[in-house]
Length: 238
Image 1 (cartoon, one colour):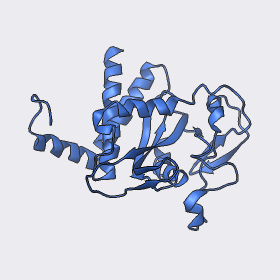
Image 2 (cartoon, one colour):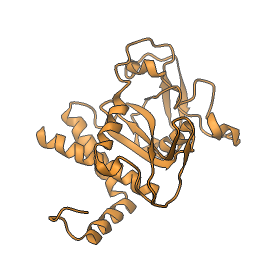
Image 3 (cartoon, helix red, strand yellow):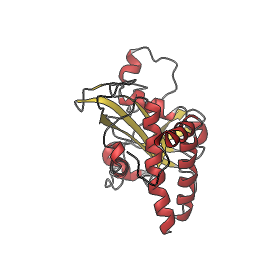
């Protein structure tokens, strides 16, 4: 169902698959995000991020890692995103909807921390991240999560405006970084909708309204494709 001006679908799919396997889509997203942040007068690499998940229904197409999200009553997959304070995607992971949010965020952040040397603040809802002293939490703790690296602690949902304020109550070591949390801030929730807006941007692409893919990696690639499209249009206007 490609437009007529496109090459044959087999050719298009070949390059899409090749770029997914060698990480080109993720690298393209990273390069464009850095360039757009520079255009906005920001440092190319973010020092603060926001994490959350979106549960997406799947279609009748078979495939790996599908499950039921009991909280949202959706059968399908979860899209876990880490975005900067502009709402631009930094990292994306797609997996079964039955994965608890805490475990999903661990899968999202652990491979990424070496690529994000400036990331010092991570915030999310109380549902998504454990509170101070809770460790990994969720099913991961019940399965014997001893010895795992502690996750960054959470900003309560109403405190997301505290990102970048430098006011912290404590911190949790995460890899080689010290990730701060602020559980006592009481400021307007100015950044509460940043990640929800990113999910809306992604869902504007028809392919992303549901999860149509057999492979989770393909779903991740389409997230990067959707954000690449958005960032290219913004850079063209700059």
